[in-house]
Image (cartoon, rainbow, N blue to C red; front, side, top):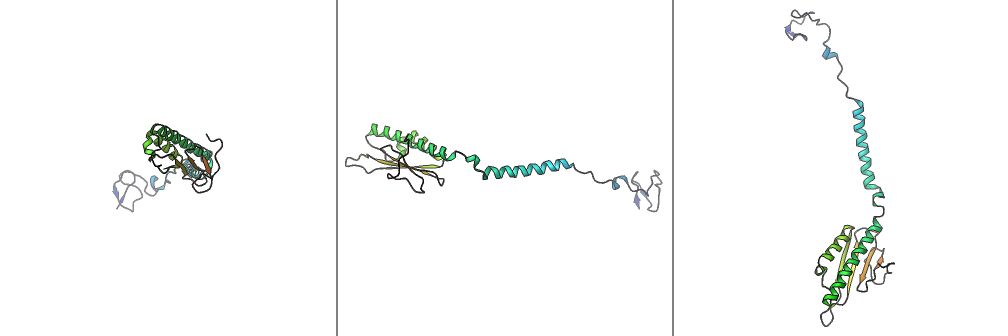
Length: 183
């Protein structure tokens, strides 16, 4: 048995005309012969170009150093600003207490904000109080700013408030040249 494409009734396969509706069964059905509708090529092209542009933008964002232009001098400047802020807090503490603190936590928010400023540009502040004298008072300290990025300056300062720097991959020491201008 066969189904008529027009009226959808069952008919004999040998028939050339449908006995119910009179449809010509020798002509292929219109839905079977029509080619499937083509998707617009423009949409496909726009989609592919969007993917290509997104990939290129990602490569440019991560590989091209333009987005980091000026970041080295800016980071070094912020690290020096953090050192100056800690030095100011240490001087204030020393004038009120007569000694330098054992840790930077004793300085409170000023030291915490300076450390956060340094960390925001990938620098780590390291404070070391000097040896206590016979009366128990600490009269000296060393303060280092170590970069997390290779090629950035390492800074050193102490109670003299002179900041010294080196571009070598090591902590700065008192023998390194002072920065000019120092503030």
